[in-house]
Length: 211
Image (cartoon, rainbow, N blue to C red; front, side, top):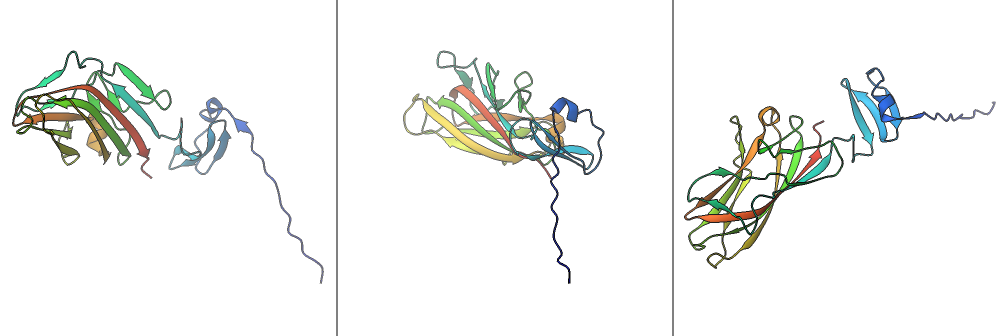
């Protein structure tokens, strides 16, 4: 009986630029290698297979630092009055250019696709003249009805009237179609007394693409 040998073949694709890839026809199942990674077409769209980070992956982070409310000019919160937690994005940092998860003009948190998963870190300093009776309520509120109030926290003040405290909280949420269309907003309420906040930072990461 004659020997049977396996034969191996090496196929090496050209490495194209991103500009060339975007000129290709969308053909289901196509594979393309570019300087940014390995791509395929799935459900009529380009999907990045490798690496799953950086530009083109759809994942990334943005940080927005407010420049209006500082230790010299604090945001005053009236008792039992809910307001949008402001952030004018005076300083913005991104994992790469071209992404935004917050609009400082509309003060809306943004989402790209339905069911995408996000993580937000909210940072600020706060104080209350009556620390024993006052607490803050921070929550993500929809603009058009989707209930996001569960993405929130009650913030008590440690002892010490008008003593500055640093707040840092991490939230995780997914985007609904309403969130994608209309955005959402961070709302804050001082309950039981007045309070002040300043040095506000939003750090928002998109950590998973749907599908």
